Image (cartoon, rainbow, N blue to C red; front, side, top):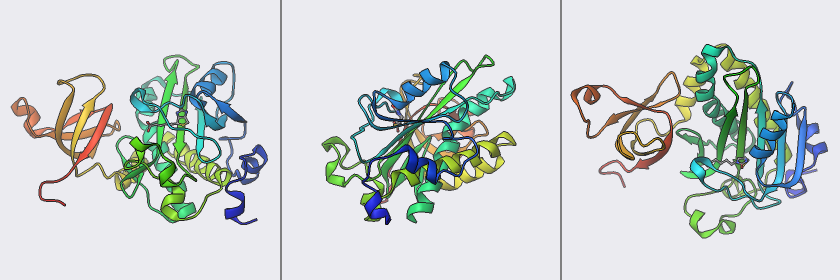
Amino acid sequence: MSSSVSAFQPLTSQAITMALCTKTLGRSLHLLQDTPSTNSTAMSLAQNGAPDGTVVVADTQTSGRGRLGRQWYSPPGKNLYCSIILKRAMPPDQVSGWLSWVPLLAAVAVARAIQTLSGLRPSLKWPNDILIAQRKVGGLLCESSGMATANGVVIVGIGLNVNMWRDAFPADLHDLATSLSAEAGRPFDRAVLLAALLSELELRYEAFLSGIADIKQEYGLRCTTIGQRVRVEMSNGDRGNCIEGHAVSIGDDGSLQIMLDDPQDRFTCVTPIAIRAGDVVHLRRKGSD
Ligand code: BTN
């Protein structure tokens, strides 16, 4: 069956399972017609004993959630909304590194899956916006619970705009969002896409457990925030609510390292500051068009 025929068919467990090549991720699968948020459903399943690697997918979300308290537009029949339960025990001294890197390694996994299936090359806006031609095609919402205990859970929530035409987005997203079909000019099979991104995530999840070097390098190559002038709206309110400067690199803890335009003291003048959470806006460079 050609991809253009199967792309708009309902997402089925059978189609996902047939496409799946993973050892763990997605081997326990909950496919729902609708749910308020796959992240919320996954968290409650995880807290009630669902195993590591369980995946929750929904055809539509009635209260899809984005980062920083935003909503995630989740119409039925078109896109991918999924949440992955990660439960692997971490040594206590690796927990905070793990929490910082999971959103970044998941973003790399999604970008690679898209590239393999479409030939398009997504870039990443720190921390985990997935962009094609500077518009957002997907995003991640990672949530955790009980990480200080032996029963720690991380939920990796992924939203990808797959088979939406540009004019189907609400007006406020017209200039900001895009979809795989809009960029590639053809529809995509959501089951195949989900299977591909779970394979990529599983590989990066395993690689992270033996060190950050590879994932840090791969993330850096895709992250177009590095080298840009940026404004960061801080979620923790440090230094007022907003800073501007040059994004120079990614730290070993996954933070965005920024050289401030307007340092408050001589020390910050020569040392970048580390941003761990916030909303980044890429500013135009002076003289660029
Ligand atoms: C962002 O703001 O960029 C993050 C968007 C994350 C959306 C996904 S859709 C599946 C999962 N369930 C949710 O409620 N949110 C995430």
